[in-house]
Length: 409
Image (cartoon, rainbow, N blue to C red):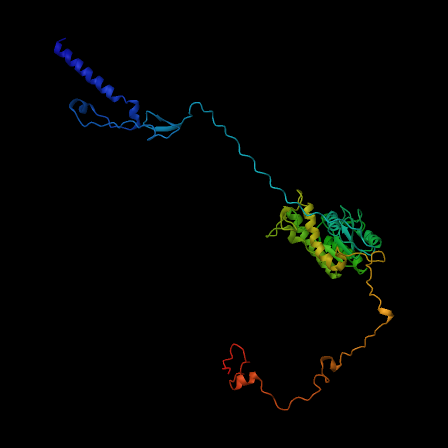
């Protein structure tokens, strides 16, 4: 190989090595992209690009962070932990203090009933039992009202072979001698009915409804014949749509039959449905608070539901009880009568009588004649109003008043 050719090879190799060295990026160059020079610029000269100096600590880096450079040109600040400093332990925030529950008002203390307390008889099925228990608590502090509950859970007007209210009600009336009778029945009556000896009618037939109306009328007539007030409570809505539709039909029967004999129908429907008339499990109680009113089966009532049911009946009941429903009623007899105040005896036992005064005596007001005894004046006296209206004259103000502009001499 000739020496000249040898020198050309080494010169070309050196140029390629220089291109390779310049092409490899320096770690510090990832901080900011710098345009690369091509081979022609490196061999024959060209514009040079100044690389910015690396940033100092505290200028572009945040304290407590470490700046890391990556080959793709990205720069990320990673938080660092100073030396000789324990790791920060994060603790869970303390749980908020429980809100104290608002205590329900204490139930009134039961008081002893007086001898002539008015008895209230409550009869019917399991719903009537809930009314009776809540009315007992409502009138627990009223000595003049006593609640007698005589309900049967599975009773109704259909199964007279199981429990016959036509026979039981007169017995209860003789036993309790009530002043008011409350009836709530019908939740168990959605079944076939035996009419006569052998005939059985399915629910919702014409014969079934006709017989059911007669039984309801006979039961109400037992109370009315004794000249007792009758309060018949209607059925509420149920979770089952078919039961709700049947309740509407039965309520119409109760209302018509009770009002015919002079009783009162207590409509509770709106208290257990929403604004659209649909069944609700949760609703407002007697205080307006949202509570659960019905059980999970959609039929029975909760404690709050029974209280709301009795609240509807209580409004009608108090009208018939009058002052006897007041908790301030007390029994007055010889043992608890207040002492009578007596006046001290007059001196020396002399009693000074008071002469009677006639209400028609004209001298009571200092006169001698009654009103109208003297003849009316023959000449009409013109009043200040007549002077102002007719002639526009105003009476002079009295001396010393603010509108008295007369010069006092």
